Length: 322
Image 1 (cartoon, rainbow, N blue to C red):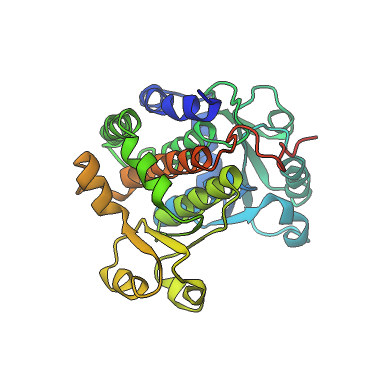
Image 2 (cartoon, helix red, strand yellow):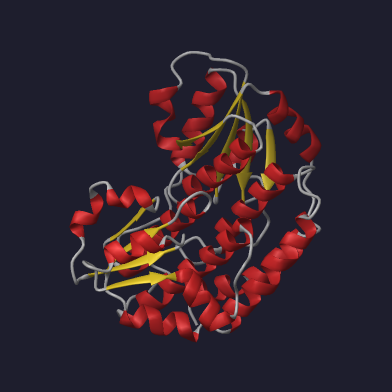
């Protein structure tokens, strides 16, 4: 068995652990965020998708948060601005771009909160506060369980004290995630019959998850893949569609689905797929976003296997660390 599949299959247990998980200095971190005029969520690749996910959550609570690619911080923070905090995501804690972004953020006097899976990493050392996601070493190059933990930390940050049902929410995620992971044959069959050229469409919290599904497919399967907010795809990009493309709709929109069905080989409403294969329906957006994350990871894994590739070791990729 590949490490990638093992790590995906560990995710329901990770959710269970996160229901009661606590972090050092968490109240101080929340206080700094509450006192800041603006918050930046920073990351690259998969970690940028976590930054975008957290930004959406925080903006919905009334806090001003902007996602930033860590590799672009030297282009953005030229002068000290209002009272700032920055949350920097890095699975390894040693990403060159993440570490450089911390230096840029400190130069403009932002308080930096580092979120990483590796204790005592360089990001840990340079951040004012740290959160270790603590899900164990990730052997596969394609980040799966570490990204799940980034999203779970984001939920704890954004919903702490604002959602009395956070424990119940985590319980639902754990239960449904276990169902999908234990019965993934339907996703394997789907991967085997889908085209290599793929578009993922999702709105709100489902947009960063669509981005992650697309990235995982590119990383592991040498596929051409894109992700867009659902209706944004109509504003030009749909021109690429022909019978060599499959479209996966993470957000339901019957009008968009009908329109795209004219051009693509297939357009799958993933809501219908989940209901038919797992009996999952009528769940809230937060739970749905985590389940779709797992769907995207499994789809990428089985797409890679079907094409005779090794998802653990993409031939052109390596960790970008110091």
